[in-house]
Image (cartoon, rainbow, N blue to C red; front, side, top):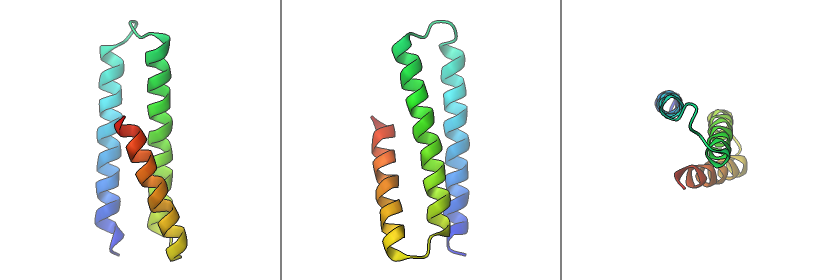
Length: 82
């Protein structure tokens, strides 16, 4: 039950990220370079990976598995911040 609030926060963050990505796409429509499109694709990939890891983390019960997922989530968050 403790993950309900975390799950909701994660879902809200995902919605915000999708809205931000859509706004960025609208602002750059037709003017994006190859590098910008590659960066956008990389960010989308990281966002999807983050979502997958968060879903797995919510269901994980083994402490070692949870630690591995938390480490993966931190790594993804760090990459998204760049």
